[in-house]
Picture 1 (cartoon, rainbow, N blue to C red):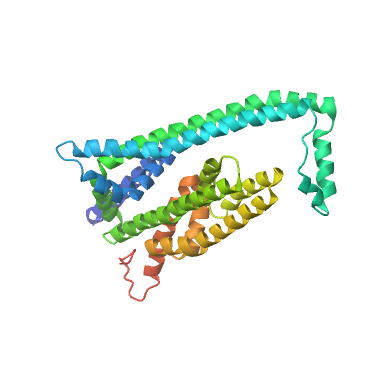
Picture 2: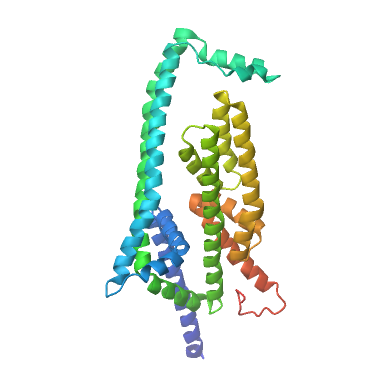
Length: 364
């Protein structure tokens, strides 16, 4: 009798130990790759988002090396599309930072900068603004000396911190493109391997769950990125018509901020403030008004339809997924959050359905 119970007990112990080893190795591997996880996530998101485009691009190549050349050239195009705007924005940002530094230095040794005339027309706040401006810039030589000392101390620290952030972002982008190349090159084997491994662990119904997560990522890319690009393009035209400085750069910044819920008003609000400080109060009001209209249409009509239909997910959960994803994972969480919400909602719908069976965890 002892022999009959030893077998199952031994098998259970071995299975438990094997799973404990797998989990421990997975955690250890994640810890080793923790600094590269953002690049890996971005590569997966880009590969899923551009899958249809890559399919059409792959048909242009023939021969034994078709996969290699297609992956290499397409990754190069993606890299150019990502790097060129960053370089352009970086050059403009550095140039503007230098100009701002010189303006600040000149203000320390000269007369305090004057406020726009329309400030004097603001009731209640006029006196407070004038007093603050006079206190900030009206202390003469002592303020100039103290400001110069602060600038000499803080500017190198700010430059060093900015340089580290730039290097970190460049390294993340480089590893993202490298990973993306190998994902394109081996995407058929990777997709089949992931499906087989998931089916082996969770059962065949998990295939539907993976499909819905991929659909959620694609829908989020279409509903968030493409709509944000359209918002940025529209606002760039508005900035140019209103006479704002660097309309293309500010349009690109608006597009980036439009990817994050409720962040776009910060971008076109800054432009409106810049216009107002230059005395173009009407142009500032027009920019703010058009920005709010574009944002309202995009967030309440365009984006819910695109994401909701593609991900089969209520827009409330999309919004919560985006906000929670950004808070937890950073910018890549814009796409990972809705994918996670799609998986959870899919499981919930199946469990709460009348036809649910104990073995089906994802539904059809």
